[in-house]
Image (cartoon, rainbow, N blue to C red; front, side, top):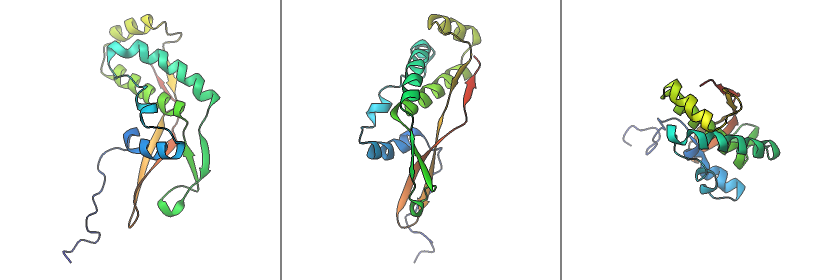
Length: 156
């Protein structure tokens, strides 16, 4: 043996994202990853108005179709109750994070101009993020889980 406790094991050193989790979600929901990822425009200032409009649309859908809690497989690192977000909740989370990213790297005047174009009813934009985590289970593999995050308010 070459001194490795777990030969071939590679720890994950990057943040857990929807791209890690989406295969798990697709398997559980019977949908395709593109059902979610295809609805999220690129996080650019030029797309801000469209993203804000989409956020409002998907927040309504998420209120009508919330995620659910199912028994978790604790042997595979899940919590006793595992949260499975709805498609709309995943889209809301990603759109909200896209807006936060745009606001962080853009000038306030440019943001105000785009939000005016979007006819945003409020300057503050709120959303509930979905947070992703992973667990490495020796002998079984890496498993990804979703958790409902704390509400976020963006003040452009």
